Image (cartoon, rainbow, N blue to C red; front, side, top):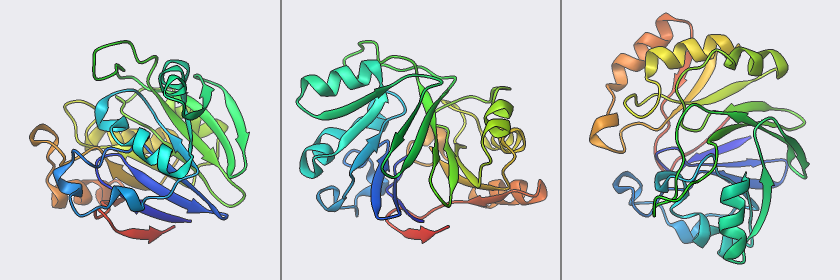
Length: 225
């Protein structure tokens, strides 16, 4: 599985010949200035919630690639009106796509479109393919039902926010990893804005002390798991 980090909470995944993308926020992210949005390929775009810092480039990427946007009902309806292919889901539901199954999980956050209209319930995703199962938490606080997610799905790793202020920080992310039963965490939702800036050495050290491998990916770089 190849993973490319495009900054903030945006990751491109290539696995089994399929390409899918999470929460594209690139054009307005100064840390992703070196990323060419027009070069990103994705057959599916998974959106955790409607906030602009998770959806800003969804339309342009979807139109270029004829992608299918996978999201909650409200986000689906928004993009469907724009003539974009969508697959609606909601919390607790599972659907089997060509690249694997997707289960939409709860998230403790808020969700609204840039104009302030209701964006439906925020969520996360468990993606299961033939050789990997992982959890993409979206924007969320720590919640105890993460243990249910870990019990239901044998997770290989998890994407967790660590920037604090708007989401959980590193200490709660470590607790989340324990509830989920994962030892490997790919960090997201950090450094993009002043109030989610982290101390890289501190968070890696704290995670290591708690026997968690914390990956702080470099924007624009691809790595394999």
